[in-house]
Length: 405
Image (cartoon, rainbow, N blue to C red; front, side):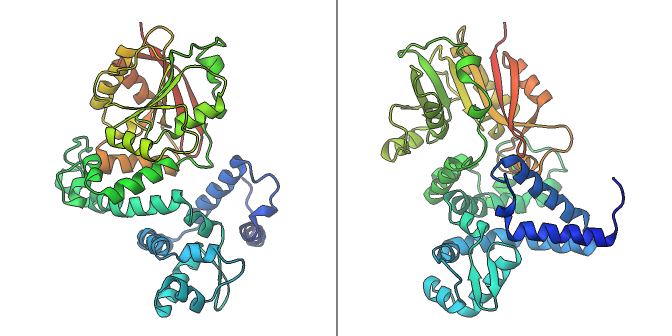
């Protein structure tokens, strides 16, 4: 790249500032690709411009964003701003949130400095895109879940690695999670004993892909799995293994409303009870079944067994156990669909790298590269037919596989 002058750099900065103040001015920004590219380019530019003191202050300040965001969610600061058509003053917000105005001003200062809100005047605050995002279940539940459940494991990571001489954590009973939470319980049993955290975990998982790309837009199930043939209403069509509240099954049903066959969501008994008590919109016509995927798969000969973000929760030896039960249930014409991250060997996106470290700290598990997936599938008796990446920013992909002969 040719060198540019400082004056040219300042002109570029002015253009970036104009975009930041009015993103809607960019034609075609509804397309996810330019939006993601702009956002990632801005992040990399910010890092490239840092001098050491900038780096130190960024790292020191970042841990405060999550607890500060949780305060804004819990006390209704963000929702109060979103409910207003114009600007709001500190006194008005204080009355709505019951927060001391001196403390509230300090919180609002932090929020505007981190672009969570906009401050057009000395005592004038208004919602922006991030403020509105913080009022969605995806953000509000995710913030609470990560603060209460995940953050303690992150904080414990340095001491854990010192104590265990920097060996890669793979023992699910001996992890930063246990150190941070001062517990012998693994995450899922711990959640069962903490109903509020189970609730926000399920809410966060249910909304995780809201507004994001989906594999249904990139893989034609009718052609690639059914090969254009009709289906039998009595035959299991789509078995959503570990499918939580059935979000993906609902997407599938809505994407292929004319396909005949049973759509089945499998999960733990307590999750199935939650489905039955409060089914998501669109769940009608889908079956819910209690099933432990470490036990033999009861649905035999389904056209597709689908698992989304299951294997990154487990180390290889446990993943093999799950896969072999599925293999035993599959017949000729059955396909295995694995919806997971497939990490690149270099320049992995930050979201994927972040999730890999999260899985390590909590579960002793991991995100996997293409080579690691190929080894795992071969060991379990499967042959990968195709890997379709559908979300480049997270490297989420659909792995299509069949039983190896």
